Image (tube, rainbow, N blue to C red; front, top):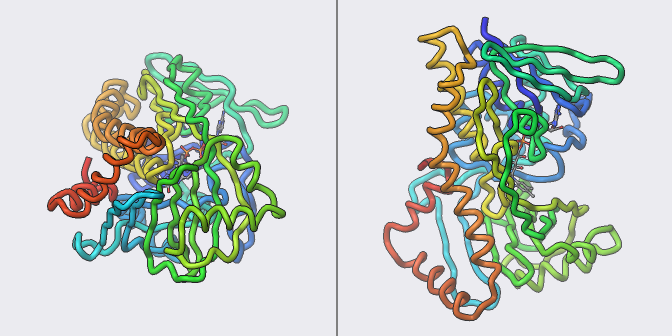
Length: 401
Ligand SMILES: Cc1cc2nc3c(=O)[nH]c(=O)nc-3n(C[C@H](O)[C@H](O)[C@H](O)COP(=O)(O)OP(=O)(O)OC[C@H]3O[C@@H](n4cnc5c(N)ncnc54)[C@H](O)[C@@H]3O)c2cc1C
């Protein structure tokens, strides 16, 4: 039986391991952090990848989890997005996308990362084809024409493992990427994303809001429970100092209220705030020999449009198809030519998403009055020009590459 090594058991590494096992491919999954042992009625405690955040899953991502047989479990803590409203502070333009008008059930689903992580981890632990090795850090990687060899350390113990294919899903600062000599283009946005959950006096009615403000693009997404919403607010570094910490709850709620107006009613309560530094990190190559980069190790992007993980899942889905198709003709699962063909096939979708997210951040950060007017007319045009909405909706749902 074919075996693959995955380095990195974040949301991407765990999802990919399950996709491979479904195709009868054995996986050794190595993760630096020791996973929690939780009781059945608890959410998974903090882990770097499935933390306090919520993820907006596109329709295509939901379909991928449906095919894996995970959606019934995942949807217990997921909420559909039925409308998306986009506005800019101090401007008259407004763009609206309505799922019913686009003839789709929803634009996607918002899910708590803690729940997504817990469902993935539970499935991985139950899957006999996956050997989960956590609490080990991969510290060496070498490859020959025939195979890849890695060393992983746990306390004083060193493990040596070999495989014909290694998938590096070890995050933005990927050790594996450096070990195979792949460079990166880095752009520091000089921003942090403030992430939390809030309670508002008006019910969310499954509407997702994106509001471009002088402080940064504020996203409010519906959460399970009629009045709960997730907040992702990328702001200039330093601003967050005023809002982090329990004693600053009211200060933060006031800032939200001022930026948002009364569309959501009164901002009544906020949870603990977390902050994530934001940069774009793009690998120069994604396939070298028998190693392929996945997830944030391949491309880390700005969360402004909630596209990063959705893009990673599409990559993973296509990679698994390339691997299984190739296995019908050859017994070499790590064939370098096949990995290069995979990389080539993904570039168009990746570049489209990367460019889109980057231009939204840069385009809306500029307060030049002429640009503001153009943005306004753009938002109005979006609402009246026929044909634009279905196109944008399809891209956002991950249904068009
Ligand atoms: C604020 C914010 C909001 C977001 N919201 C959305 C959204 O709504 N929708 C969306 O699609 N995307 C969203 N994203 C993007 C999404 O979070 C990422 O795409 C996703 O987390 C990438 O996961 P990953 O598994 O590739 O990387 P990571 O989560 O970084 O996982 C990498 C794993 O590798 C392990 N590791 C690292 N080095 C080693 C080593 N040497 N040996 C062993 N293990 C190692 C780490 O411990 C870690 O568990 C958001 C991002 C941010 C910052």
